Length: 222
Length: 223
Image 1: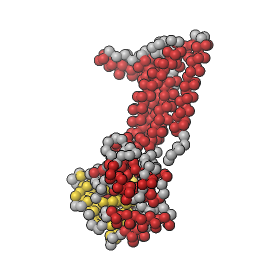
Image 2: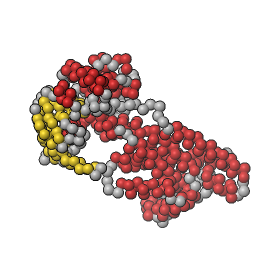
Image 3: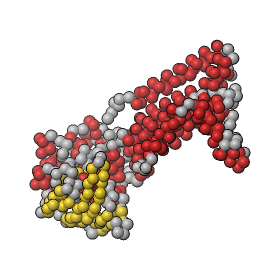
Image 4: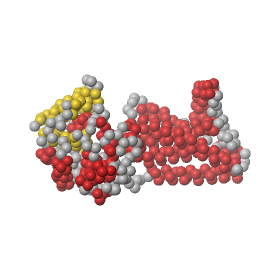
């Protein structure tokens, strides 16, 4: 298989995992921030949004400090289970997950805050417990916003470069994602490869953005 | 059917502080708690339904406590066996009329399907003449159809009493009169005890077998 397609497959795998993880983590965090009242809520929101604004290299550095072989979590994983995350595709998943996390969390929070509390009260009086309430009323009312955020997160994870390079490196066929492969191709003067890669990334991202815009746009049904 | 309410609740928000301290009892079949807006009617109704937790006090329905701060009783809203008609009806917009009515009968994490509900749902749809709109969504309904759907949804699992939150306040005067008459008629037919909150003297005149006037968070007069 062409190296470009191998890189695309790896990118899709990494972005897919990162998106799946954020579907749980980002949605849960967004829901908690929308519903729970606790001191320091806005501070927590700001801290959790940091990955969106920090330079990816700073994020990569933080990740090395935490999950590197001598990092506090990394050392424990290595001693205890023999698990190493650095220079693995799983490491790239962690980097992409964290970079894309705020996109899901923020749109999920906004979407949950937009749900009419009256509908949730009605569901409670009608006999629903809290889990049933979430899946039968809250999520169906908020899913458009949540899904738009999830699609953006997928696009962002697909394009992740800086933190991924620092954590997972650039091992062709193993950790070399599409965006890293573009960098390598340009460095090596392989313009044909670079052109193909860039085209693939651009088309994929446009498709995802169109889908996200359609979901987040005006509703046909109230 | 009786309600005994003796509660305190302090709420703060938007730089405003409000102290609710109401005590009343009623065993009338139709009770209206009335008073100007901001008197604490909504908070009182929400506390009875279990949607708002008072700071202290007791709420008894038919003599049984559903809330008692001293003995830490706080029956969740879903187990109080009350129907609730919301101000703007709070119909689930993504569900059809039939699904809305079947909502309380369906357990679990999934909403009723378009044909769920069975005989009980059929009966209410017929009784409230909703056959033609059963597969439509709330935004396609007229005001009267919405009210009947919300009422059917509240009554389908046979609550022991119905709570009504300013049911006509969002309507224009002409429609309000019609809907009031219709609701009166439907409730008479169903024969369920009710407790309504309203700021409208016409509601008090029509539904107030017993009347409780709230002002500034306390009971001002009873009749």
